[in-house]
Image (tube, rainbow, N blue to C red; front, side, top):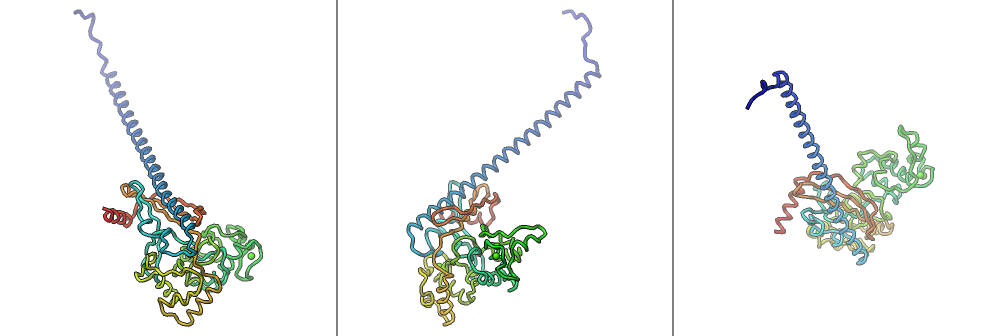
Length: 368
Ligand SMILES: [Ca+2]
Ligand SMILES: [Ca+2]
Ligand SMILES: [Ca+2]
């Protein structure tokens, strides 16, 4: 083979620039592939989070549907009273860590049954008619409540109570010359607004009312409602509500003792129940000793119609959990006994607490 001339190798200089171009290409491709990888990873993680959120919402909604079904059954079986050991709406077996595939839902709320006692969990729905209705009750009753439960001085409590009345009444005239508040008061505030002149739709509106402070609101929040006709169910009202309605602490404790029964736990089979608005003094007197004053108070209370024995509106806090992913989400809804949803609020996904993980593990041990 004959070569016509010398082989033509690239010059050293052009070889150098070829190498630089190649290195650049490799660098650019590397950066590109890393950032595409990161982009895809973020997309997958977002999709996973959204999937998980949908999953949690779905499981929580299953819990709420179950409650709505039970409420309608309860309505059909109407016994004329409602209590904390009602099997349609309460019970650990039916409301705690109920399996939906590999997820669970729990319907519960926290409570204390003695003064400053430990925080306990009631499994089931929360009775809105065991609470103080800010749409219905008169200013005297509200003022006592804001003093006893909110810790407000009498003058401030009166101011809040009369301003609550002016907030919800349709007129623009003061319900009390000193303590009420209508448009004139709110329009003078740094960020002005008007008095609502309609019923409260949510308890958070209380924060807009003259005199209310975040500290008082925090104390009263668990015990107020905007649902129902303002008659408080004596079978379900928390101790704080009994006292907030002017009941003496000793009598309130006797009622709690009667209600919780021999095992001292609320919501169990042995609970005592007032099943009609009748002679509560005699009923209570069978289980605990009452003074003549206490019997009088109970008789007067029955006569005012402030307390009753039935309920029609319930708060459902449905907590969904996926133990494998350690994620949880709560939907907080209010429904009436006909199974109609009156309010709906979806929380954000969060990590399960060690206590919640412990409950699931305990339930699994009990099942196996
Ligand atoms: Ca008014
Ligand atoms: Ca008004
Ligand atoms: Ca009991």
